[in-house]
Length: 124
Image 1: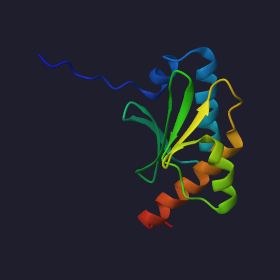
Image 2: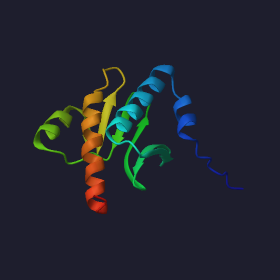
Image 3: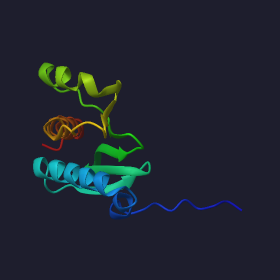
Image 4: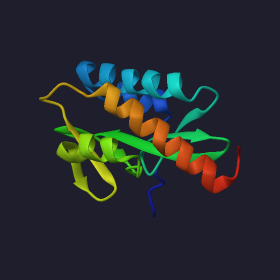
């Protein structure tokens, strides 16, 4: 008999993490919400995603040693230079838990990514 995968709520996902990671995830949520109010958080691909205008814009999740954020927006030249130390693949940013989390960079990534999704969706 197949086991049914139960998708947690965003709050359940956060509560499954250590207290320190819970704080980081909540601060990431606040950072994104501040630059793109009116969207909603959900679970997709078993991690947290942020939807704007019904479109999945970006994803982030907690792993054993890092927070991953996907996909990486194109951004401008300054942004691309800023994210280079955190890039683990073309479309992934990896923020190690042993280092300070760069919330200002997460804010920029959210702005660029949500703008990219909006332009593609012609939602302006």
